[in-house]
Length: 351
Image (cartoon, rainbow, N blue to C red; front, top):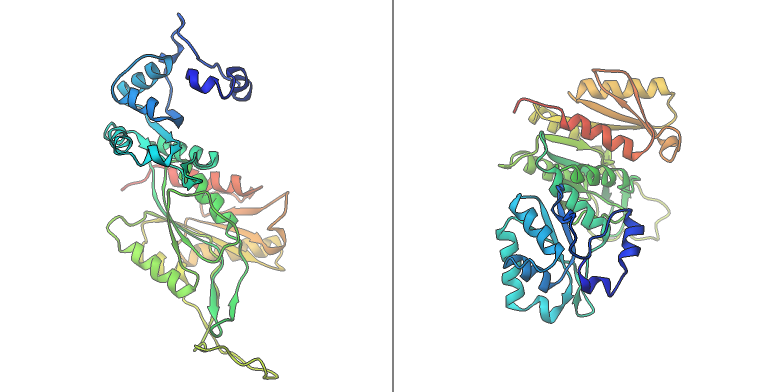
């Protein structure tokens, strides 16, 4: 901690909260030179940034930063200051210098005339990604999530049910583990903390498929696909461009079968890792697993996550992992699901 930081919060409070040693002054142990995996400077004042850029070792913290730079360790700076300081050309130059050293700079949004510190979940997520992105077998992952809908007229839709939470939980964990994530987001009811990922909105099945095809043909195309979105099986034929009058006693709509995203992408990307989801209602466990195995074989998938609609909020068994290699695996919650997916992604492969 710097001396200025100690005027705001005591080292004892930080030590108690973090259960870690807090270095505030010089001592013979020189703990600031201990080996670490990464360095987070949060919040980072302009004075702290300037001293680091110019190699001024006037505090134990500056010595720790210089030592980390010398070891080429990942470093993340979170500047926080008034707009009059953040918009100054010298501040901009200092932050450019940080990036030239290979450090990362993460500014928060502007609020009340200040660039405030981002949320701790966002900061920890980014730092985790920076630390883990150099681990072996990091992948480029395309992940669909949320519900899809189809227009009946200019104000009415048919839509299936999905909050997007499972997909976001998986994407968040994979991002923290260093994988590069592209999210194709349908209709969702929750907000994500993933501010550093490529998120593309596609609320209709046709637009989601179009995005998937564009991504598959891109120069930096994914080598792993996770299909967690709830895609409509049927869409409206010839929706009305205007609002259908409400005075009618009844009216009918015609539906047509939707193209299966997972089937199309599986044929185009045969060598990529692919994980699907299978949701059924009113099935026995045996029937559910059989349905998952049919999807696994028909679509050339590496694994299928199968669950009953009735057990989506179950605290005992959230879902089942089904693949062709091993036994059925119970998944207790979204975290255990994400960990197993990450384990599958991280296995060595032939590029």
